[in-house]
Image (cartoon, rainbow, N blue to C red; front, top):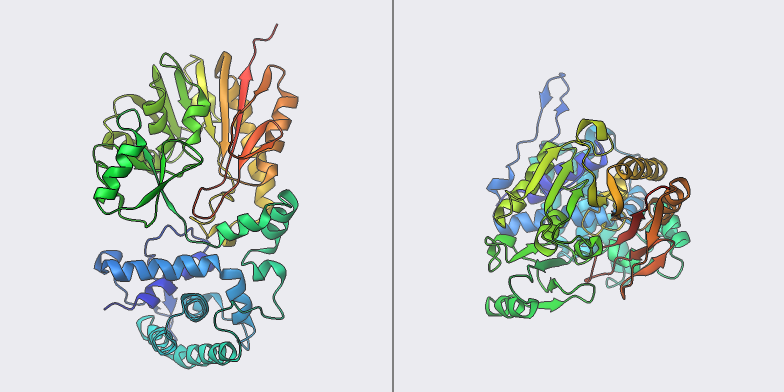
Length: 458
């Protein structure tokens, strides 16, 4: 058996110390200098060497520690005489992982303690064994004095830390959503659900749900949209019935709203301005069957994922894919206006934190104003490519008002020919000219939508 905790510590250190996003894969071990100045690396296996059980544990340790990072940091800080330097970020991460096991995973004490201490050997830092042992035993003593069923509430922890959130984000959520912030916090601190989009043009959702049940996969229908199913237990998508033939795709129910809100008829020309990874692109082709679709993305690697998604569902020859900065229209636009534009704008990702808990560590409050500015610039640039009487659907996976309704309000104030179209829906909350679907545990991620119409200037 591989030392999964050492692997997790190495990958978590890359997030904490190096600011790298975590996507569930094993990060390359971080180099360190020995006393003679030579560079050494821990000898750790790659992802292909892990069996499914160990890989699941690796991801639980990493994702769980990221979700609870703010609280774990407070617990660790009170037990360290002095902070560990960046050079020993892997030991810092290992200590967080050890605390996460004891407090949240309820791993048997002796197993969590011994396995975490032994991870120091795999990381080639045997000097840290005593430190890790002492910190975790100290935590155990404190836990044994209280109710092990309750999450600890250190006296020195702020409200934000107790909620496992950075201070700025915690304050923003409370300010933006005074009636709903607790629901968002609960979602952010929970493992994500797995949602499927059924190609209902080929098979009714109820029929596919019966197919899943026959395969031993229990699911529930989503209240958000009529094409979504929520699996009770996540699985490898490639094992889903009909997945290779495109009968279903993995996509959150909130994201599935985009295709219908675009209102693109069969003869429409459509632009998907920030298309990767391609879930909405594919859904537009399946749901709307437009005359043409152009899919842009700035990242060639991510655009390749769009091609893979379309190819799996036999749609690769329908859409035109182009690597381009959507805001730089001079580099890609050929002068032919689009009837419909989907702008799935780059954003903070604050509506999908359950899936990407590293956002809590990597995103900064100063980023929000910059993102809002970039979103407004994209809207303004793309507006010239929209045909008169055409519609643009603005979408983000953020729950922060600065990136959503305020961006749209500013754009409508600045653009004479722009007007907001109503979104008549049972889901979500009306927010200015758009509608916000708040994230909800075991149901849906968070999305904002606004429909904009371009009137001819007289």
